[in-house]
View: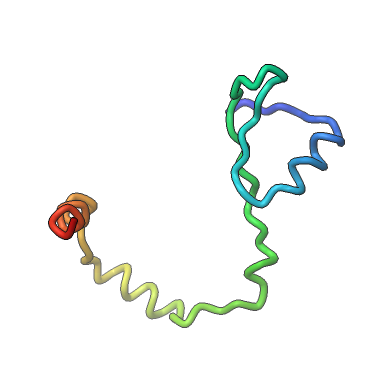
Length: 78
């Protein structure tokens, strides 16, 4: 991955974003997209209703459906 260092004024613009934004030049040409990193403070103090042991048990148990099965089910419903 490439890294571009931006000036403080640009950092301030990016810090104000809470969703994906298009990055454009002066002519309006889209250069790319900026996705802000997650604000982990939103989750401070939140605990999962599932214990770590239960989570591990579910992982070991396996199961579920494949993406192909889910898509086929959704197509049948449409």
